[in-house]
Image (cartoon, rainbow, N blue to C red; front, side):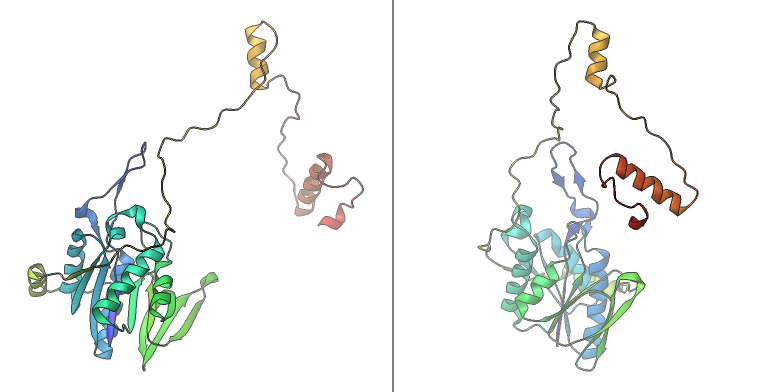
Length: 292
């Protein structure tokens, strides 16, 4: 049984230039999000119950190896960093490309993968679509946005959040790709000997060529926002005050606003229907009571 946790290396506190839009990241503030740490803990538990191996993998630059060392210290049996052009150039990256890189690297390194766990969405983009793309690439079942993951025989029993405070229990066969929300599950504390051993570990990495697709959005130019100017007719007359009043629209005859405080829903409906009749949104002969 091979359980893989896919983590994304991301800066939790990036600096964005307000004028140019340039994003600058700091490796000291970068690492796995809370959702990815929750996925790692679930992967460690599932691998322990099924007697399998837990592998932490990321598609990122060399600086992401620090995050993989943390996974080793927490109990991961093996780690892998996948290097690709999209991993170091955000302009080449999108959800489908990230899934392609992960699937290609995992298949080349491990062959068949039984279970992939990851966070429900990354904190830098937040689309949450990468797990679905990855499931399609691996030909696996998918269950996204989960609150809990438990082993149930040869498969999984998972709990997913629904609208209105409801929950949905699903039986997920393997192989599968599951994404989890950052719930009450917290990553276990690493022991000091494991942390020291992880510092000395050699992080393996493989390279994946750039994809042929061109679905990523390209930024052609970056400039500060400037609202479009309105075209106004030139004011008439020589008096500066009257010219300014004409430009600002102060001389236009308009209905002054009024505050309405109806005492009942029926009276509020009557006021609304009267306004619609007055401004031509409803036909003059339409019955007022029928619109309630």
